Image 1: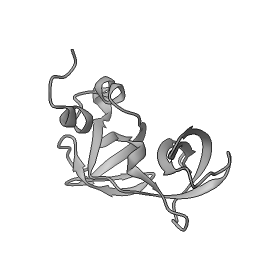
Image 2 (image 1 turned 90 degrees about the horizontal axis):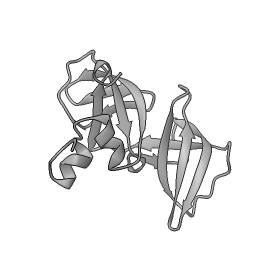
Image 3 (image 1 turned 60 degrees about the vertical axis):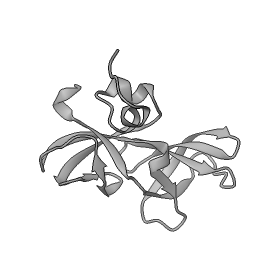
Image 4 (image 1 turned 30 degrees about the vertical axis):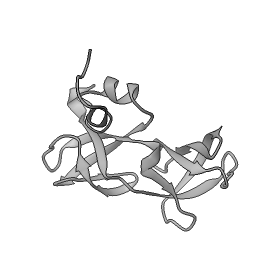
Length: 137
């Protein structure tokens, strides 16, 4: 037993990385807390509710879930399709970022992109799961 809580809190405020990856998909991206509820990472500056309070300047790993990454054709942030998994109405894309990190995006299957193709992405995050670097290394 790692965490006893509501399903909502286990998903949005997991106590550790093991719980976070057990209850849902996502990728870890390095980031720096730049202010209250604000993290700078390779996806840009994310402003949202953080899963735990962190001081400004704190290095964190950010768990970005597929539903947090939106496909936007004309976005200045581009990612390359590395892998895709057809899921009926959606395709789960594994994307490579310029930083060398990866993220996932759950995109309508009407957008059938090829492997190696760059696509525009943006984020829409309400709750961001963060893990201070020293706590899970």
